Structures are given as structure tokens and as C-alpha cells.
Amino acid sequence: MAPRVKAHRASAQRRRAALLEAAAELSAEIGAGAVTHRAVAARAGVPLSTTSYFFSSIDELVTEALRLGATERVSDFDAAERAAVLAVDVPINDVIDAVVDQALAASRNAEGSQVEYYLAAGRQPELQPEASATVQRFAERVAGQLQRTGAIRAEEAGWAITALGDGAMLHRLAQVDIDHRARLSAGLRVLVAAAMLDDDEIDELLSRYDKVSTEIVEEAASAADGQPVPAPA
Image (cartoon, rainbow, N blue to C red):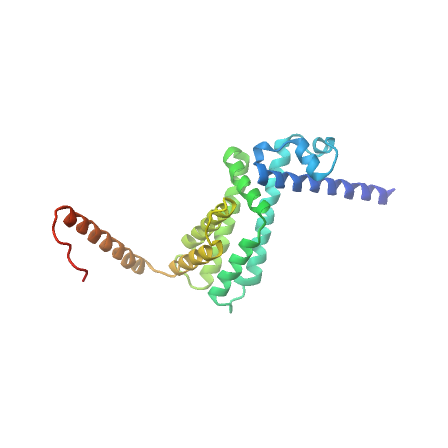
């Protein structure tokens, strides 16, 4: 009798997993709020009654599916970290290339599911601590790797890099017409470089911005008064 019970449990777990995968795919395609029991069952290839057997409501099913997607994203991050970031002898440009490759390898459904997870957290207070913990984990892990290289502003850069990754993901989903690989690589290079700057270096660089801004305002004022604009020094 025991083998039959075990087989039954395995079959049930496969059906449950199929429902979660179908719900995640549909959430990415049409939005979590539009997912129905019927659509999930049809996508999973199981009877309609199966959804209510495993989940008390469509909200429970979709929420669990989105949580699963977020967990898988963490696993993908772990894989990228093991493959490149933890290798201390890898040049930074190679590390950035590996990180970008990992990001661009994610499927559209996986990225859509992640975005829906963030949106669901905005609507469901019970998801907000989990979403916050997920983002914080990414930021802290990135910061930890930057600290190993002596980065001065590792914490700030860790959060900025995490935000850049999420923003770039939104741009890919929106099919923004740019070279996503080039833009993401360039942005990461800038942020990693900025992580190495101390306070004095940042102040000196920002003072250049203030100087140029002042010159632009003065040139505009001179042009408005009809005065000749001085030649650049």
C-alpha cells in the first residue's frame, strides 16, 4: 500500500506544480488580476476542480505562484554569483558581462512574473515584508561583493545596482527600443566605478557639474541681454 500512497502524493505534487507554473505564466502574460481558475486549469491541462482542491481561492493560487517566481529569481542570482562574482581573479568587465548575460537569459514570463510580484506586494500588505526582504537581500549581496574589492560606497552602490536591474527589466518587458545589453553594461560600469569614490572625490566631481551649470545660466543670460557670449576658456 505504501508505494501506491507515495505515487499518489507524487502525482498530486506534479499537478500542484503545474497549476503554479500556469498561474505564473498567465500573470506575466495578462496580469495577476486577470487570472481565473478556468484559465489556469486549461493552461496546466488539468480538470477545473483541481484548482480549488489545492487552493482555497484564485488569489491564494496566484500569490503562491508569484512567491515561487521570486524564489526562483533569488536562485538565479545565486547561480550568477557562484559563476562569476565569487571568483576573485575575474576582471571586473568579465564579471559585469556575466551578470548581464544572466539578466538577459531570464525568460519574458519570469520577468513578467517578478514585476507582478512587486505590484501584488503594493496591493497586499502580507506580501510587503517578503518583497522588501527580497530586494534587501539582492542589495546586500551586491554590496558584500563590492566590499570585498575595497569599494568605499558599497552599500549605496548595492541598492543602486539592484534598482538598475529592476528598471532594466521593466524596459525589456516594455520592449523599449534600445540596446539593452549595452545600456545595462554601461550603467553597471558607472555604478561600480562610483562605488570606489570617497567623499572628497564625489564632491570634486559634483563641483564640476555646478560649475558647468553656472556657466550655462550665465551664457543664457548674456544671450538674452544681447551681450556677446565669451569664448570657452
